[in-house]
Image 1 (cartoon, rainbow, N blue to C red):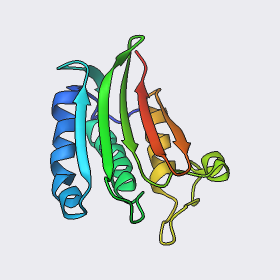
Image 2 (cartoon, helix red, strand yellow):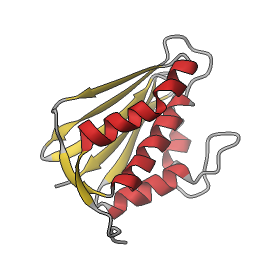
Image 3 (tube, rainbow, N blue to C red):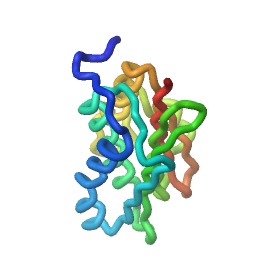
Length: 154
């Protein structure tokens, strides 16, 4: 797979992530979920297809919003930064977490842990990241929450 012609170099944090957070902020407020954005640098540049990565971010943020049962102090933290010359964007929630069995299958097409899920979102997100020679990782613990991390390599 290769990237479509719409690849641009964008300030990943300041423009793309902040704009995406603004898009979903009201949904989080309505669900009584605190949404926080942190960055280690003001600007992070990388060659990406902005629309595709925005789709990935919206999917991950939406999944984080749906990760809660009836817990109090619902929190989703989006963090962006740079480590070892790679840019990362992480979406962390303190929701229910993902089982070990689900972690093994979660990026497979048509696999879903949701009762009404199609199993397309994370599979498609993984494919988009592969098109960018990048990856999406999951770290999760039952009862404590999950972190999905997008890593864009130099």
